[in-house]
Structure formats: structure tokens, C-alpha cells
Amino acid sequence: MASASALSAMRPPSNRDEAWRYAPPTELEQLDESQLGWRSLSVAEGETEIETLIVRAGARASIQRVDVQLDRHARLATHVVCGSRNFARVEFRVRLAEGSHFELGGVTLGGGETTHEIVTHVVHAEPGATSSQVVRSVHWECGTGNFLGQIDVVRGAQQTDAAQDFKGLLLDKGASAHAVPQLEIFADDVKCAHGATVGQLDEMARYYMAARGVPPEVAKRLLVRAFIADAFVSVDDEKESERLLELALAALEGAEL
Image 1 (cartoon, rainbow, N blue to C red):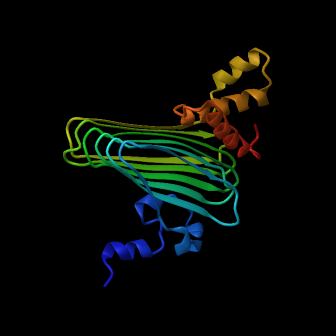
Image 2: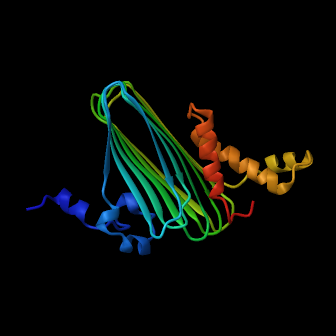
Image 3: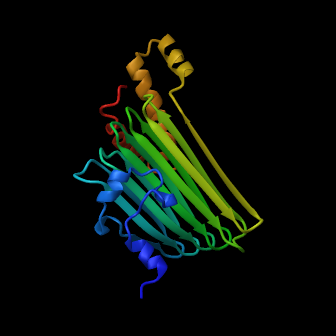
């Protein structure tokens, strides 16, 4: 007989599941088992890897789920650009061993009635591990950007250092963004922080640029670019950082910039 957890994994998700609470119900009804599987990614002791996920327009919803295991002192940097015109979701399930590090820099962009989500569940299972998550969402018309991030620090995982930072930028009144940061901490020698803000373009910055002769459409695009760039500030390779920025900006087609 299948276990309760196995049965839960086999059934399609719904909005009653906390991790899917903001996903569009009509899209969830159309998901099939082939879209919900997990891809395994392991980083060996002392090794460093980079994972880049680019979600573009497709014929149907895009769900990418990655199950990450980091051995002692392993490092993984993940970069996500989600600019599909359909429902898109990128999900990471991460377990950190002693002294390991997980880094996430992610961007969601979309207009129309699209919903884009970045979802993480990071478990600090041993002492001295660190994690940093930076997510930026830019949406317009009736587009929605969601970030659901859970951090668990287990008993005994002392000297954990974990942080989440989400910011949403709404270019139209109909757009929305949701952030659900969660911390569960069972150790006392830790540093854990999370922050979430949602707002519109800085009007003072736009006025400042206009006063110096910068056309409004150029000023708006520059401000959006600077906002997105926060997610890739930790990318060591300048050319790769520029490539990710350009991919993100390309998804802004249709926004009134």
C-alpha cells in the first residue's frame, strides 16, 4: 500500500496546498504527472556548480522542479529568468550539509494574465551552512509574480546564516505580487533574515532623470534594468551577468516602457 506522502505526491496540486496557494486554479487542473516530476542535482564535497534556468514562452505551462543535495563544503549558485507567456513555476528543494552554500538569484517578468512563481524549500541540516536568495518580480497589465520561500534550520545546525530578499515592481494597477517567506528555526546560534516589499517605480528617480534630459521611456527602462540587476549581483562572470539581464529585459516586450 502506498504511503500517505507517496499518495500526496501522486495527486495533482491544488490551491489548498500551501506551496500552490497563488497558482491559477485553471492551470493546475491541466497539469499532468509528466510536468510534476523532480530532477535530482547533487554537488559533491568541496565542489562548486552553477545552474541556470531560463523559462521562455511555450505551448503549455512550464514547471521545473529541482531536488538539490549539497555535500560538505559544496556550493551551488542558481540563476533563474522566468519570462514565459504561460503559467510558469521554478521550484527548488535544497538540503545543505556542513559548511555548504546555496545561492539563488531569480527574476520573474510577465504581463497579460500570466502567473510566474519561484518556490524554494531550503533545509539547513548541519552546522555552518549558508544560503542567500534574491528574487525580483516585474509585472504589468494583470500579470502576477509569486515567491514562496521556506527555510528550515534543524536542531543542531548551529552557525547557520540564511537570508531571503524579495521585491516586486508593478508597472500597472492590475498587476500583483505575493511573497510568503517562512522561517522554522530549532537552533539558537544562527543568523536568519527575510524581507519583502512590493511597489511601483520610484517617481523621484524618474523626475531626477527627466530633469537631466533623459526621455521618459529610456528612464523607465533604465530603472527596471537596475531593479532586475539586483538578482544577479553575485554572478562573478560579467558577460554571464549581462546575458541574464538581456534575457530578462527581452521578456519585457509588451510592457509600456
